[in-house]
Length: 308
Image (cartoon, rainbow, N blue to C red; front, top):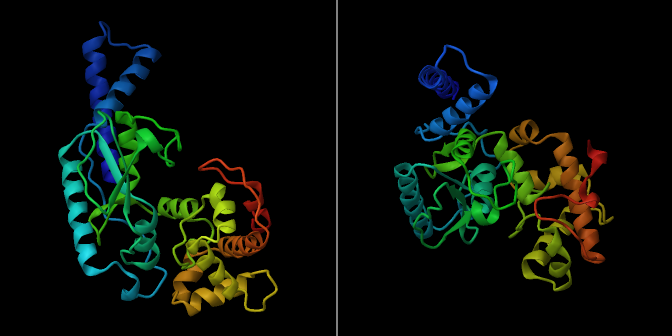
């Protein structure tokens, strides 16, 4: 990666030198000239093919479990679709795309391609291009959904060449799917944001941190919600309606997490936050209330500052 940055910086220097030489009558340039030239250089750099490194993720948290992975026929179909999309991306300038949500969680946490229904891919193109795709692929266009990992967040926006460059730099290629994902450590922040503090705890069909839907799901006794709450109540082994860090530890170990990896990859703060989140959920289920929340933003009840 450092080599790539070095080559890009060399390109910038060369471009700036040529621009200054061609566009100024003298050998000097004002600060405004240099600023404009840097902007032009970044725009050109954004169109230079980027070499994506293989991901430097740590080993999966859980022991291999083939019963949890996507069925062979569907996995074969998904991998074929990912190849088509990657080929389309590689042949087209000014686009980015990366795996998101449940499939990403399975790859990082479990080391397998989990069956999460559809396969979410966030993408964006400068020219409003739209790659061809088929089920189970689901494309999330940043022109509609935004991109949480850039400065525009969840606000819809068309990417610029400079945006594409920045996004490419944070991506790598996952060897098991041969597709683009976030590299470590950003991938962990993505999982925490999408799935909440309990991301490393295997829960049935848990779909993440959509706080504004919690009241509706709890009062309607939605199947996915009730299965998750039942699992959390099982973690509460002493039935005191308060889940401790030690109970979280015991549960994930019994569920197949590898202790040495768990100790090094999941901090004491993150374990504490998982326990607090689990406690909050079982109590919320017993007494649900309306939550006003903006997508992509947290709520005060779930800051868990006592874990800091």
